[in-house]
Image 1 (cartoon, one colour):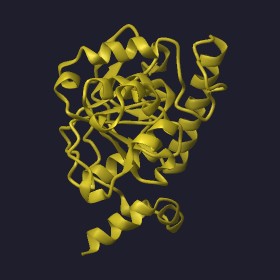
Image 2: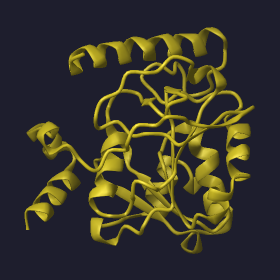
Image 3: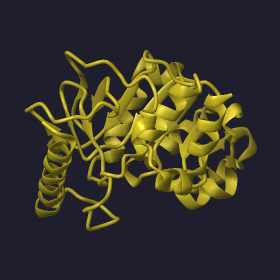
Image 4: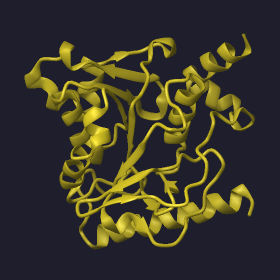
Length: 245
């Protein structure tokens, strides 16, 4: 199956789950959820299940996506004194580093929003990104084999690839997604070579370890990085020049 067919199938699956979540009134603000990592009823309960895991408790540096359903995770990370690494939307400004020691405790909730993260976080140069102990990501759809479909921009995969290239993430770094139960596909999902692989799925009712996972991506597929991407995501250009030295 060619990449064009895979992308088309992925988009069809996204549309189905977005529509399902709206029709069943599972979706939360911001709505409609089409085109987004969908916020959902029970996102707080899924986060609470995540916080019970040993890999969460032991993590000192966590990378969490900036989307709405993972706000609870970002807030709790700060509350527990963890260093929070958050990619900026579409990676335009690279990564933000939030150190709870530098944020007033009463502002942790605001700091866990995108606007608050820009206020209290600092844009961190690639060389100064700390080693990441745990990745928490949002999804539109995920299967029990660790395949994940995001909202279609490919930024989550790029973020992962960048951190692998920098040596800040290894193939053993756990990747967890928090989703609603309806976002789990019983059938294997299509995937591309650069797609990240999920180790654990946490919902409001279940914690599931994925099975028969394929190998995680070993970095960025530079032959798929376009000039337009290099222009819109400056840190890609920085990393490419770094690799050539």
